Image 1 (cartoon, rainbow, N blue to C red):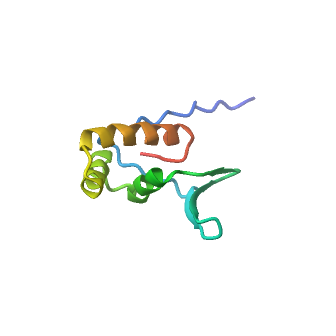
Image 2: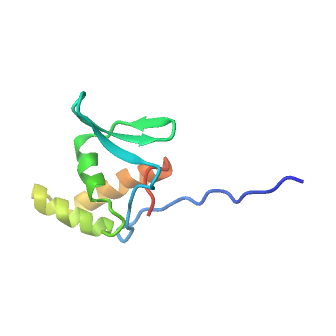
Length: 101
């Protein structure tokens, strides 16, 4: 008899989501190459500088809205635009299993 497993539920990122990286995903700085890497089982991601700043704030306690507000202050940019960009980026990472919410 074969056991059936439930299909994986898609995480949907919204402004009230509290994103974080699962314990098996690590973000590490590669000093030799001078860049950040996201290490996942059998995969390595090379995030750009903006993605790194967003991911550093993804602690599971802050909402996407909070993160956008912080980055809007840091970069003197409109929070609505930053929030939309963050949601799109985190949704892509969530679909790849790199971020949970």
